[in-house]
Image 1 (cartoon, rainbow, N blue to C red):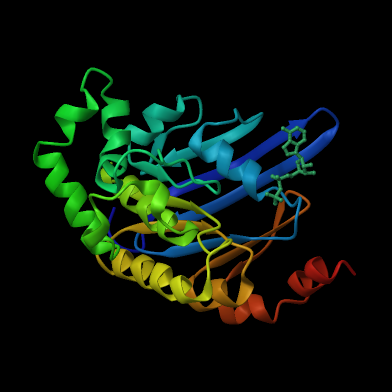
Image 2 (image 1 turned 180 degrees about the vertical axis):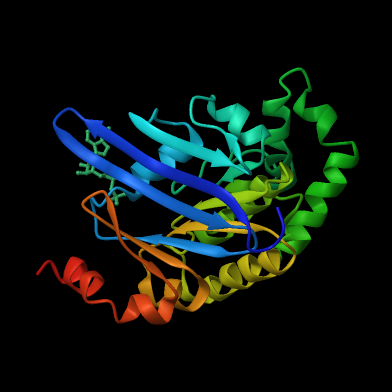
Length: 247
Ligand code: ADP
């Protein structure tokens, strides 16, 4: 879609766990070219909603579309092939493989006949190297991933996600546990990628960072979207303040 058009749309999406409604009748649009944020207090349903979008969990009701195409009901890897990329809150790199091998690994995984060792010598290795340069880790490409700091591993993960050339990247807490020095680098990379046309949906607890990086911002509370808009609007929304202060 063109910039500003709807890339991902959720309509009336709900998810229950027994008697608990974790996500209730959520309708939300993520537009092409945006860095859209999803915030909300603990237990408000952010992680569940991410899992409904990626297919880790089935929705009880509602529709999820990527570029107009229905994706709820598809398996996670199908959604991934349609251009839905995600990073994980907990890093899942292979510590003994090199950083470059790690970036190629998801590709070998998704085409299971391709041996990792083959993949890493082809043009895919070059692409991995380019992506590592992009996130500022090119000089570490041949080192084992286990030698990196937590924040650096998150940057490697971002390169991993990019390897699959996603149209939309779901980021789960990109700033979580990252030291302040690397935080600036991570937000810079997200901004650069966004300028190059990548759309993001970001779950993040660091509210000042969200208000600085993201637009628009959607706020969940009790499984429902209680506010949506520019960071300026969200900052002053009484319902948002109430949700965060628990009033
Ligand atoms: P957030 O990510 O905003 O902290 P979650 O999506 O993790 O919120 O959780 C939303 C609600 O759903 C919470 O009340 C949580 O306890 C509940 N929940 C999440 N996952 C499960 C599960 N697998 N089984 C039962 N309850 C769950």
